[in-house]
Amino acid sequence: LTRTMDEFKDIVGRLGFGVATGPELEDDQHNFVALNIPPVHPARDPLDNFYLATANVGSGPVLMRSQTSTVQIRVMESTSPPIRIVSLGRCYRPDTIDATHHCMFHQMEGLMVDADVTLADLKTVLKLLATAFLGEGVSVRFRPSFFPFTEPSVEVDVLWKDRWLELGGAGMVDPNVLTAVGYDPEQVTGFAFGLGIERFCMMRYQVSDIRRFFENDVRFLSQF
Image (cartoon, rainbow, N blue to C red; front, side):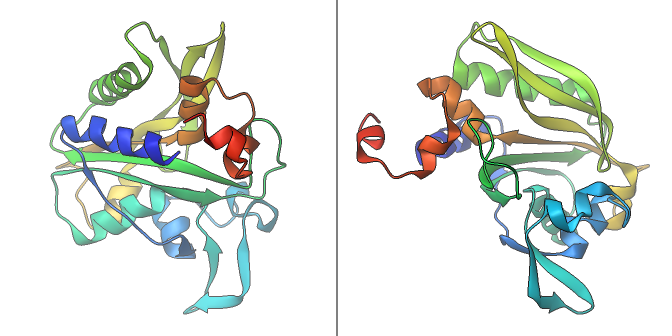
């Protein structure tokens, strides 16, 4: 996983993206509110998050971040456009653990904000990223979807072993998100994407079970 993240940093660096970091313990404002996720949205459900029962910031709860999208909010709050960054790190969700899901996983969040950024720019960056990591013959598919923080939104799939595997979500940054950080959506646009690093890693190294990454089995790790 570390090797994969280092390679991602190198690839996106060649595309002009810097690397940003943020905390794994987050507040409600950065994990939900600024990302246009309303109070009634199911993503806020206590059963779908790791809330800390004894911690609060002001009047809001604290949780283990459920996505690296929190970093894009922190970057935009403190930086004026143009912005071109990625953030790589751990995320936490109480998913049922199986061959393709875990309660801890790694994401790479990408963000580009500038004048006249379009969906074509997003598709080009993701195609170049997939090609650089998985090879020239990789097929990438974009499916319409919905996320509160992007509009329009797409799911990104890659053809792997004769089947399509979902790698993450992406889309154009919702105007409400731009407004929440003090940007003028009439002046700038942007795209964002969040990709599962484990799934890229599983394809590259032909790993069939995500649990292998976290078992610290020397027999597995020595292969790399």
